[in-house]
Image (tube, rainbow, N blue to C red; front, top):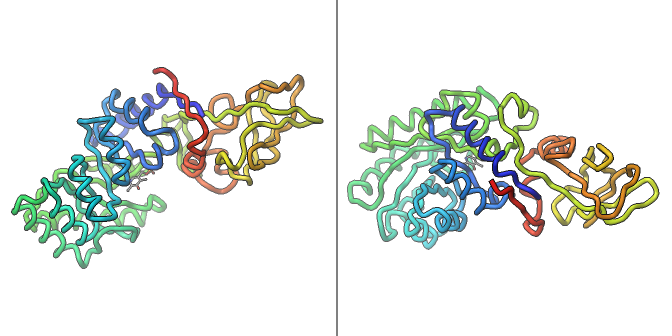
Length: 336
Ligand SMILES: *Cc1c(COP(=O)(O)O)cnc(C)c1O
């Protein structure tokens, strides 16, 4: 899998342009959506990205080692030990339940906290009925110096404008309740990729953009060209055998290709159909002169389909295909 870091930088510039003046938090969960964490965060930092959305504490600490001065947001903190580690590493912590609030307050050092209201997704987050007591406890802990409340945030489905509008109304009211409790959260954040581009009123102070940063577009949504982003990953495989009318390439479901995958791949003889995905090999229609050692582009540059296109052929989304590619598949990076 080859990652074009210059294309990545161009996507980051497009995101900055589209979502200005909100700041871009680059979401890097799942090993930067399968692209490889360290090269991605280093290039993003060089391009001026200052916020990173790391999901869990282990990922947050890895980003911290690469980037001593970045703001790094984590929102999955499983135990009080992890809360302590997160505070010690200077991570910003998304807090969506009262137990975690007490854990981060009890940790050595002053935790930077973003309080999470549940606006309908019911993943984590404090329900509206519990929010007043939650923010008043947070205000008390802040007065004691145990925490600093820097943000209020939520996550939305981005599946329907009506649902998102309802979520945004809940979010606005939660911010007001927090302010009435004496909190002054400077950072409000709600949008991921889709809403950050499509709906200005969802941008607030920070947008948490993962997919679009990597050029992965939403299934069934606007095209890459309309969005001004492009895919940055190319997956290639060598020809390992040439048979009667077919060639065998050295990549399969154990490398992360879904076995139901079907569609066109790029070959030295032009596009050909991928007809079967086995465990460590797959079958492609032959082209004249096919030879062992030829390179086939499964998706990305040189292939007719992007990861998102391919994902759509089996009814899933581009992220899913990207994060499934096994970590054992070697990643290479353009020098950039
Ligand atoms: C994954 C995630 C994002 C990024 O979503 P994209 O659609 O990939 O931009 C943002 N916020 C949270 C809480 C997430 O889990």
